[in-house]
Length: 182
Ligand code: ITT
Image (cartoon, rainbow, N blue to C red; front, side, top):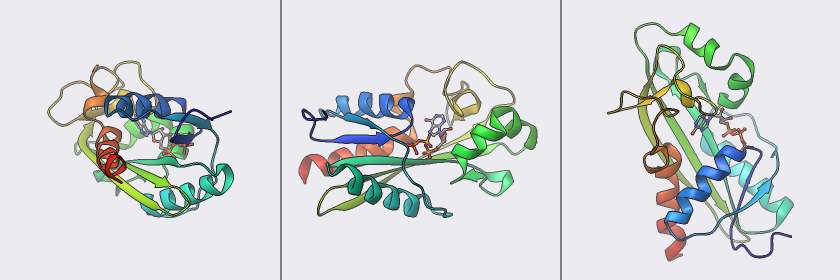
């Protein structure tokens, strides 16, 4: 099991894995999947959460791996849901988020990718600015139907090139440069 890959993505979220795999394929890196829900510390810092999540994953699976921690930060509500994005999506969801917003709809998506092996723990950050749409548009996972990236009029759920511009793409691009030269 898991033998033929040099690098694994550990996550409970199939969508995150499929996007990460697609992006890393384009950089020539093959990515295996270990589907697992990892323990998460409580913190206001995505980076601290990601580092702890990666160390925990390595202690469990003992293979070179990456994990990802994401957050959607909405300006007018003090950066909420930020590090609590997963919980907020499951509780109030996109309808709940839309009901909280008025005119200022600025937001950003942040991805932290953390690599861990026996000797190294290293994080890479990708940010994407945008805004929250007035209603849900398109069929996508998570916050995709309400996030409109800057320079677009369509939501993440409506565009077909999300993997060429997303927060995940930006973090994985930095990771790839480092990983391929390490
Ligand atoms: P892990 O097992 O990898 O932790 P997770 O889904 O709990 O999976 P996060 O803790 O990183 O992942 O939660 C971030 C949440 O933000 C995620 O559950 C989605 O609801 C949302 N999210 C992150 N990236 C997204 C994207 O590209 N498009 C839409 N929603 C996204």
